Length: 288
Image (cartoon, helix red, strand yellow):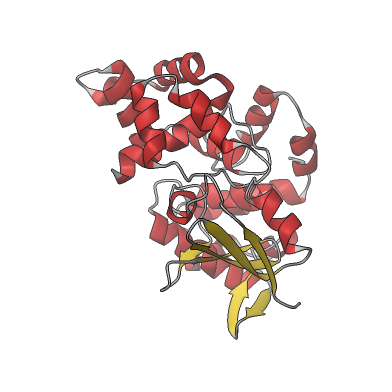
């Protein structure tokens, strides 16, 4: 494969740090020149910014423009979304000003499922390390700029790993969960293609919850960050609970704030844009 390039002039709503460090993805790494290089599908792409221009450079299975448009959600008008959300209240307006360059990626459903099972009670450097080791052993090698990169393994490739193999890669208690889910998908007990076609949000969520290691928060992350792209999903972790309590609930004991309360406020305030609202609020609270 030969290197391709695609440039967006005067890009709006596209900041590298906001996209790659808002907690939605684990296979993008910052380079010494502040660009980011990532692997998705059979593609290795480097993304950089010069002024307001975004430059995509790398090797792709297909045309780089088509590949990046789909993966980076480039046909969606984020300016319009931010304008709508900013009018809700000042808190939302502030969080959007902080993370104004966030875009939600269209990540492969299978990879997103396994990645977020690994993310449970884990920190980002460790998650990234585990996923990298899995890819190196079970994925395919791609050489780009004389450096080796590895694709995320297919279901069939990862199914070769035993629970013991996964344990050696540092998965901890998640090893059995990854193993079981891999085999559930391999045996079509959960059909990912059917899941992508299913229109009923609750049915998709309920199906995801049958997978080993997928609880409500992980299910909502998969719904929001994968090709399922269900923007009404509202993942709740410690940061989201904290920011929702600080801004809207104001219970003196944050630990007493329950998910039902938070979800009700999210639905009422943000409607079908709850997922992107969550990302702005989460990123703002965690980073600022």
